[in-house]
Length: 320
Image 1 (cartoon, one colour):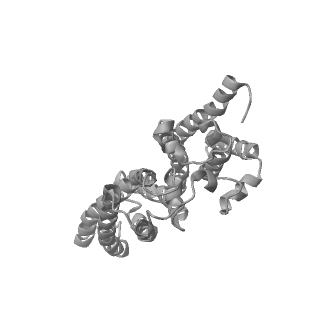
Image 2 (cartoon, one colour; image 1 turned 45 degrees about the vertical axis):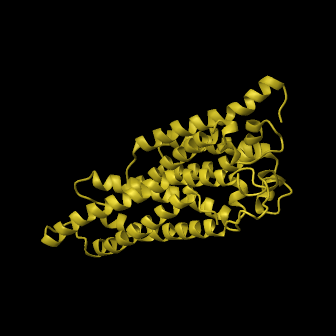
Image 3 (cartoon, rainbow, N blue to C red; image 1 turned 90 degrees about the vertical axis):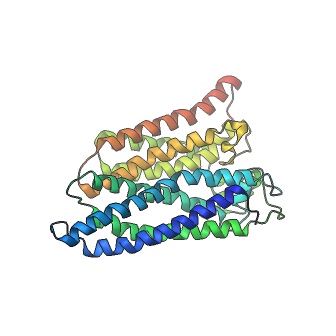
């Protein structure tokens, strides 16, 4: 393992999150067990004050974990300069057997932690505190994936071997790859592209019909197929190379770090509809603000990513 300043920062923050998360877990169990919203006893008053403190701790942990995902990818990208064969974060991530699974797990946790933040915000802004018990019960469940993520991240960085020769992204994201990703290449990339636009159309239809459940389902599908379509269809137009399908190189300086913007738009758009939709199902009401934000970010993503093949065709008169 090579202890770069970025790795040290991530491991220190993981240790802090684990420590304070453990404290919050214990306190959450006590609050969830004894919370009675309809009582006005001294115990309930003490629990109310404690719940505010615990909510602040959890809130900061989850809020910091979200931008730290981008920092994790940035760290992996920077490590590619010292690991033989790695051209970007992809080579570093795949140099460890569970590196790709860790990355996907982090993406899932973005939605999980973000949902808790929305639930906490809804609870804190209601004087009746209707979700206090629920949010602490959920945190006790969400603490498990938090610990798993931290454990995998520690294992990932301790398993990195700078002297090991790894495959570059051109090998990993191709039809000849030995990973399950190669199966995606057996389907025509234009089919993935059409599915992607179809999912976006479904999300718009869900917004128009004001259906929370349809918004959740359509946006989760959009997040999945947007990533597949990005790898299979859109990324070669960004790189202007028909054989280059890496989703990590988008984050590099040569491409103006456009990946950070594209992923931020995609994850923000699908998150607000998916997590906001689940919250609305819990609250049994329709909060239009979430879906407006989702439609705004999703539309910007679709326009932004669609400009690349359109621009290429207008300049060259052919498709890749």
